Length: 166
Image (cartoon, rainbow, N blue to C red):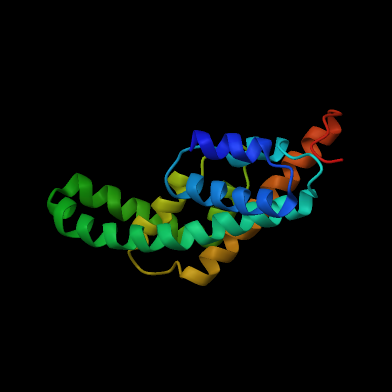
């Protein structure tokens, strides 16, 4: 991952940068508890809206994979962890949270700048016991939250006079 960050930081070609940003975001969402905002400060000549699209796209693609992994983990958890009443109550509570807050809760959580996406994305998959979270809307929510997060970061830094775009 460190090599990808270095390549991303050194890349000036907008197409290569966009592809690498997409991959970096997808990998960070799937496997690494890293906020992707640091990548916004690379390649300052790149349009912020294309950066937002790549971040959103990487998050959406990875989220669908994480949802599938989470759903399969849910089946294992149900058979193994549900033996004790405390574990059963915890799983039922987490499932209730997913059902209660649904996509709006996920959107809010994922729109918070510097939030690590890996945990909420997997939790929404794992505790999707009732199957209320569907892959396509899940991908849309992740895409929109990723774009929203980039725009929030852009506005905050612009207000403080730090340019992340030219």
